[in-house]
Amino acid sequence: MKHALLIVLLVVLMLALAGCAAGPNDAANTPNEAGVVAGFWLGLWHGIIVPITFIISLFNQNVSIYAVHNNGGWYNAGFLIGLGLFWGGGSGGACRARRRRD
Image 1 (cartoon, rainbow, N blue to C red):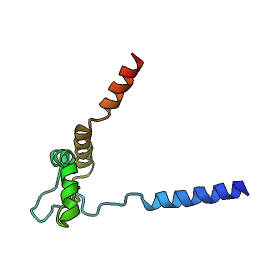
Image 2 (cartoon, rainbow, N blue to C red):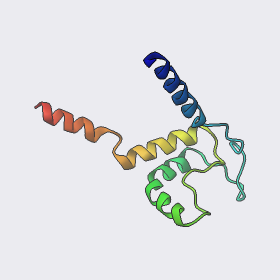
Image 3 (cartoon, rainbow, N blue to C red):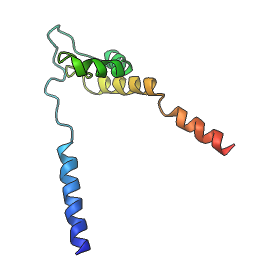
């Protein structure tokens, strides 16, 4: 009985995770209304300002935190690097672990 329950839970978990999977971006490599395709540098900027943009997006439907009209991988890389710059990139945790060991 426990084995069957575990299998059912795993199947439900896999279906839930599959529902959260990212789909294709049909607007990739197509310019927006201003004729701009967001690249690495715009992705970097969007990653840096994402905390402020997120707060504004809660109150303004015209503001989003991610540009869908982007060039793909380079925009995503810039966005992630920008997020890492804002949140410290994990170096703070490594510093604390080193301090604890010493």
